[in-house]
Amino acid sequence: MAAPSLVLFRRDLRVADHPALAAAMAAGPTIGVYVLDDTADGRPLGGAARWWLHHALTRLAADLESLGVPLILRRGAQNTVVPALARDVEASGVYWSRRYTPWGVAADKGLKAWASEAGITAQSYAGSYLVEPWAVQTKQGRPFKVFTPFYKAMQAAGEPSLPLPEPEPQEPLLLTVKSDTLADWALLPTQPDWASGLRQTWQFSAGERTADFLDTAVNAYPDARDRPDIDGTSMLSAFLAFGEVSPRQVWHAARHRASLEPAAATGVEAFLRQLVWRDFCSSLLYHFPHIADRPFQQKFEGFPWANDPGALRAWQRGQTGYPWIDAGMQQLWHTGWMHNRVRMGVASFLTKHLLLPWQAGEAWFWDTLVDADPAQNIANWQWVAGCGADAAPYFRIFNPITQGDKFDPRGLYLRQWQPDTLSYEPGAAGIRPIVEHRAARERALAAFATIKGA
Ligand SMILES: Cc1cc2nc3c(=O)[nH]c(=O)nc-3n(C[C@H](O)[C@H](O)[C@H](O)COP(=O)(O)OP(=O)(O)OC[C@H]3O[C@@H](n4cnc5c(N)ncnc54)[C@H](O)[C@@H]3O)c2cc1C
Image 1 (spheres, helix red, strand yellow):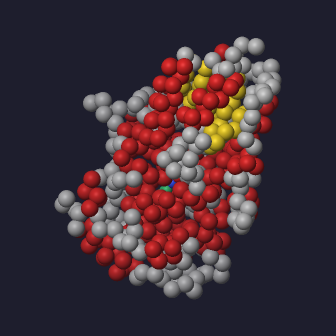
Image 2 (spheres, rainbow, N blue to C red):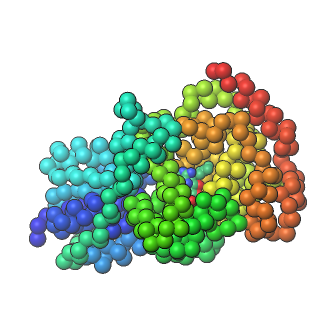
Image 3 (cartoon, rainbow, N blue to C red):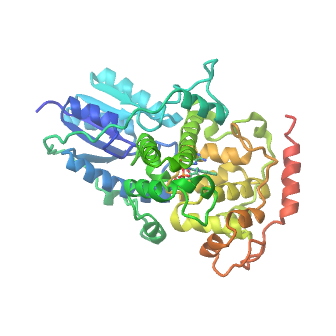
């Protein structure tokens, strides 16, 4: 048998439209590898994401098996685990999809250096975004800091290329090397098992959901996307975050829909624009890696954030006394997902009404979102907090009462997550509000005034 190649799976847990897998299989016998590496995203995956990962790896292993490709699971630092495995199976090559986070870039550079020293082929491919972060630049050759010109430049660059099909199966490879099992990793919660809401919510595959959304919801997306009481968005974010579907696959499925039904064109355009936001966030973290834990706008380094563990706990548990905020936090806790409009509301409430640092909210989202993704989470938190690139101005403070009335006019979302509550008035769910809206707003504006001219 020819020497096999390893394909490293990270946030690209699929077999179709996977250039690295396709290239490896075209070159010869292929082994899939997933390394559970707590440093891959700069910190261990959160609880909800671990739950998702368990199921995503189960699906990936089955898909790979049908291609004759075994999936080896190992735990530890990627750059220790992969060289050892490569030695054990006498691999001739290592293939992967490129990552763009500071941690991913650093680790993969190290792996390339090892491969070159060991005389092993190391091939990396694009695959996780519509474009690579260096492919879209200003006329001066600099990274974009504002979304709209980024979006226009992407449009000018033309359509992303068509997704690749699944590779042809190989002769099944039987290995003697050991693999961990998913059970060894205990990614699913047991004591207590808090995942029943997640199981109930996530009963569809990426393919089913894409088809459903494009068939039934995309036409109304431009307005419905702001309505948490309507099933109006794709709910593909976790599939995209783990790479179970590629953005190119989603892009072309949506384009195909518009070609079949011209009335879908406006909805499709609005939907694809959001997909470009995903690229924009990744591009920001790639070009400005300091935003991982520091504000994009330097003047916010001196922002007088509060330190109030009690308020943070109330926010995390959905006990702020503001039904709009508490409904969102309940949705997050039960399903591992929150509607984007409500994400903006709860993030604004944390960073403005409670004056708590965005990093505290980002960390909670990291632990509780099934779609937790470093670039999307960091860039969106900074956007809402007002300290990010192209951010909402800090003084735009979402009103947690009128936002509920506006985006959930019939109170359906409210009653789903705050049963028996009849209005978005503070205290309406029987919880005493932890801050008074107007006073909190004034306090936030006063805090902002201290750094405004900085
Ligand atoms: C404070 C905050 C934190 C967030 N953290 C994350 C996160 O960790 N992971 C994550 O995937 N999204 C995050 N988002 C972005 C957004 O809320 C979700 O992507 C979206 O709600 C997912 O639902 P959907 O798949 O139905 O979206 P759709 O409306 O159907 O959009 C389609 C896809 O476009 C992308 N997208 C949509 N909105 C955004 C956006 N604002 N920024 C970047 N990409 C976007 C997502 O991949 C999404 O699946 C965050 C937003 C906020 C305000």
